[in-house]
Length: 547
Image (cartoon, rainbow, N blue to C red):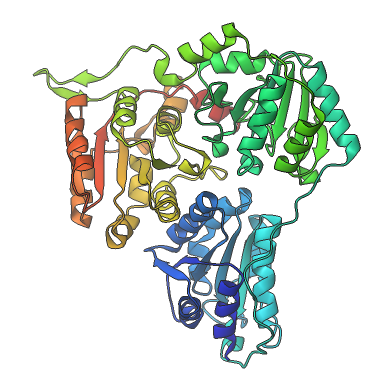
């Protein structure tokens, strides 16, 4: 068979079941080969959307996803999504056609582009190695949790490939059990702690029940980083998200801990509020199967090198009896009373016009009302911007696959594609895309993708007619804000133009239309054009500390 067909078939035989992309002449045969081998192809309207959708699909399905792009410009269009996936260690394989002649208009150094953002470049080196190279790309993505760029030179694609043996299924990643000395260290730390807190990150996804069982045995409170939100949903001792999104009571409880254990969690500046959530004298332990991750953000952290689930299970075997630890009646009352942002009292700053009609709705009021309306079985994708704390903190999610947070690169404009990938990975759930006005317009091309795929999605646009983060960061110092403020846009009309049902929301009563859509056949997706007040979100100061 030809190299293009052999590569496409090998990718699917190695475990790829969904391929996202934009097809051009260079990746036409590669894409068709993957479809012929049994993968579902999802055409997006921009390569950036394809890469972000693949990233989200992988995060919320637990499977390796693929992207297919044209040589040169197809890959450069995908670069922001590629950077996000690479920084997040998402197992994605980007299959790119490649020209090797520097005089070609399409020529760029594609390996260098991958390396620049932290992805792993692999090239199909010859017709004889084509199948092995394709298999290697999937293996690196899956086993090392890396984003891989598989370059397939045009001058090789029509060559005759060596077929080689067929691949059956995908290999399982080996489970790393920590050394006994590391387990003893963690055991001693847990035995000495009076107020332990477990903070789980993306490396703990899939191991939530094991970590929760260990927490129960030693009396630890449970929290997650933002990307692992939902891992302990429903647990009465869960603090939800640690860091900038945490309500005051949660921040106080974490800061009072005498032991913080990061489970597959970097404990970075966002999760630990630049270290302020680690109290004086608190012991910090990191459990991670990547030795390089330990101490990267917390040089004082004690390292336990091993798989999160295997480590938690090994610790449960070692422990005898159970301890109250941090799980006291007083702490339980605090969590119940104010452990969620929606339970924290606030002054509603919704506005009315001169005639007393609703003009702009407080984003907290909006999101609490949506949380009550939308079904519990949901998957939420969030864009970046001043608004993002509201859906991230006020919309509950059922588990760790119900929240997709593509924020490692902090790029505006990825939210809609994120929700598309998550919707395809979790088709039994209602997909909710939470966007700011800036991100909605950046990613608007993918509104057509939502309609074409028939996704019964709710797209919520938090429209404050500005890049709100910059308004609130620079405005108090008297800087001119003309460059970051915009005239009103009719997002409801834009949505209808693409084939959405749409509603403009200025007050809570307008959300009745959302209820009608939810009760109906949901034959078309719904866009909620929410005209929100221009308020600074509580987490914004934390965000700008990291600049």
